[in-house]
Image (cartoon, one colour):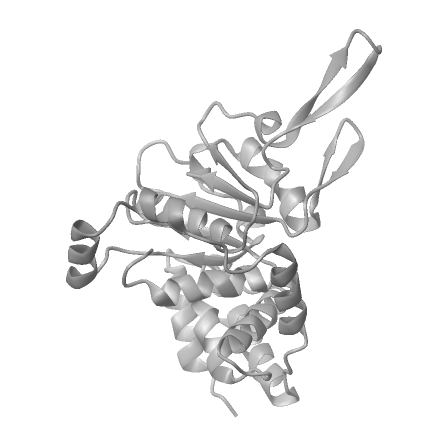
Length: 288
């Protein structure tokens, strides 16, 4: 489906198996939306897409309570967030107020409207796409929103061979229509439980903690990785190990996930680049 992007696809699957949300950041037209559709189809998840625009309101995502004259009561009409996989397309074209409408849903699997709490479907995933911030009409995601995304991936342009196969192959929409589910929601939940049971040795946890500590002490990082980021890194590494056919986490699993998990969480100082800082941390912290 996404030619030449096997690593990004595996990372996306690991993110969902670990129970995380996924942020796809790249220029338009490289397959971000296609990947979201393929993930939903592969896991037989109910799918909703919201096109984020500057005039989108929180109620357009969450839903709204409507007064019914017949009963004299307000009745909640759920929005598109009540689904298995929500594609928040071009999320950074909406205002910060609308972006933040997803926070409670992503963190707790529920939304609150007019003082009433409504549980979301389980499993529930957000796959958001965003354009680079230098494109016209974009609003940067607040740090608290970025922290809710387990991984941030970039698909980038395909290589020459993959692009030729894309140009000469079937239409992506036709392929998506013919895509059959490989797993269902229950199977995905079972994989999540299996990933949680993957063993992480004390030495592995020492290495993970050393990375977290290095991020907090680095001269070019103003805000390092939080304990929540550490839990996300461990969960993602366990899922990566499971997909690699192992029941124990290796340092290579942590290293495979570290840049897509850490780069968007780091707050650089003096204009440094988050991806470069994450790679520098990997290079600086030795595996004992």
